[in-house]
Length: 520
Image 1 (cartoon, rainbow, N blue to C red):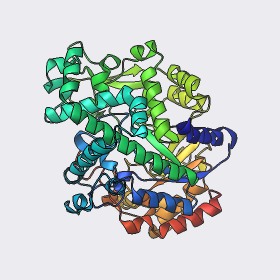
Image 2 (image 1 turned 180 degrees about the vertical axis):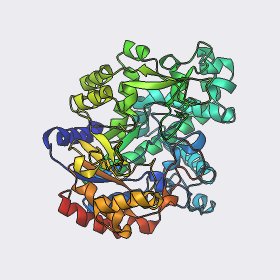
Image 3 (image 1 turned 180 degrees about the horizontal axis):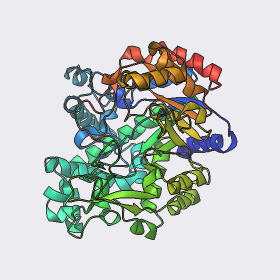
Image 4 (image 1 turned 60 degrees about the horizontal axis):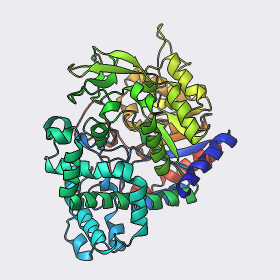
């Protein structure tokens, strides 16, 4: 019952206070300052939340919290239920008595302008494993909190811990291609033998998840008690090299020989002549329907435990998704395959109640059936200001663009940009002279004031929520963007902020604008 309270609070706001208009900041915990090369959910996260509260900012949006795999993308997590161990605060483990001061002093500070996941893992994982070992040796057997955690989460935790151990044993190779056949197929005897053989290593991973969930619960409580709701994010698809795929092959399009048959993506368009091939396996929705979408119910329930509102990435995939044979090198030769539609959301309403705190990521080419699915469920859609300037076929300005501030309806979430967009400053700097002139005329502002004018317009819009990436509040250039879609490299998912950034005076200006927009 304890974990449901924040969700019920949000539902009250969603269902009863129809005209609330709030402001939020998009900032993933990996971006917080830390001596270990990657941000965590310790003191700087608490400080960030306190700054939001001081400035009447009521929403904090994050990216998916799962442990990342190849490419370090939070949208390709090793588990949809586990938390990223790299986000665990080492300092908090020391305060709790699971590490000695000498342990911390033995690790050199990772000094890098961007997150270096390799160095961060080298610095943190030995400390995390040592802390877990100390907990097991001294507290685990007597800890009621740990026992309760194991009991409550065994349905996903047992598989995840074993999966992580096997990943280590097989040198981080993909389960479906390099693992022994009996483990690949999850033969009962082979699983039992592995659990017995690697009992100690498995326990380490379980304790690390206990650490993560315990620390996150405290941070979430701090946010909620200060009037701040956390917006979480779940990708519609799971990664092929995840424990979710390994355990649930019958729910995904894998062949009897456990070969992935299809890949998700998007078809060719004006921005990508060959489309986008994402590599995620697609769903066998008929199998999900047989047990009343129980895997999805568990997934959403876990998301509501960790956060207050859930943004579902690629919402249009519930209506239909672009499915490409796994043998294809591009997304050109795919087809639209029907999704579960409202059957899934009817099931969600049966379990969680009628007023679901969900945001639909409805970007891209959206068809009437997707709009119907979104609107009939009352989900706010997303409006991106960087996408708001377009021209009609006759070459004149399209004042009817749905993303322009004056066209945004109430049941919307307006963003300057998302994690996939350039920063606001970088976006404007990249425009050609004609587009810049158009933007200047619309906002009636010179070049050096455009970014703040766009933020002000978003705040003044009718949208229920106005959310800004932290980089846009800091007025940072393109070098600070979080991700460039369809690319893989060290510049993605690696933006970091400084301690001074958390206390940026720009928050004061944002609060000033919020007050006049009625969002305080």
